[in-house]
Image 1 (tube, rainbow, N blue to C red):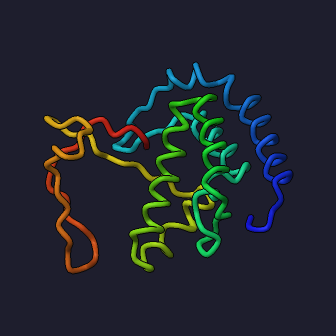
Image 2: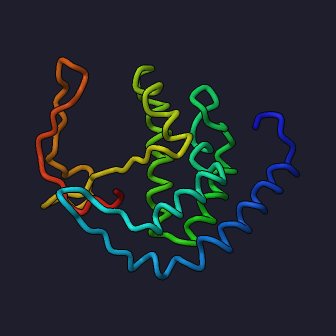
Image 3: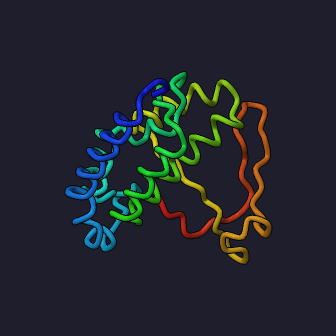
Length: 171
């Protein structure tokens, strides 16, 4: 997107707004009533979420947050903000997952090791991977300063979590 003129940005936003307004916004109220269920120990995600994800992928929204080096578009923050505003207006519930994923992608780009970036950012940019922030826990809510959960680095590069989370909001 570097070197793209203002008119091209505006046209891309107009087209995205049209799709979001016609295909996502009308379903927002019914999406608020979607029910998830667990079958045989696995989460069954409602079909409407898959349809939403397909629209988001087709619009290229997941790639907005990711640098070109990792498969994204690397657009200016002002353009990302315009897309985010359209999604929030259309369906705040489903926009949460998309925007949390984008925010986590941005955090990985800033603080992640090169190995982590190469492993996760291309999948986020393609819309194959989603991410969430699981801050809510008993006794702290989402007050980051009062959370008790801790991650202890392991020799194999993973982290062992000690704590209890509640109300994870994105599958």
